[in-house]
Image (cartoon, rainbow, N blue to C red):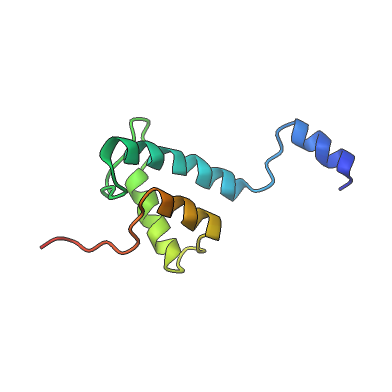
Amino acid sequence: LSASQVARLEALGMVWDALEVNWAASYGPLQVYVKEHGDCFVPQSYQTADGFNLGKWVNTQRQAYKGNKGGLSASQVARLEALGMVWEVRTRS
């Protein structure tokens, strides 16, 4: 595409990386959770008020970090770690 075509598409709201946009939209509720609860230990069954399954999403991020489900970018890892993400969660006895 020419620079002009790119500019026109972007003016219309073109999304070039839908996966990153979706990831960022899911990261927002985690930021809210951390602000309210002080940590990233989201119960797997936890859903936000609008029905987003944040607990499942956080678990998916942990699996992706371990190399499953496509992995995470260095930027995503850094953003999660900035919130205090613990990658290996052990259940309490």
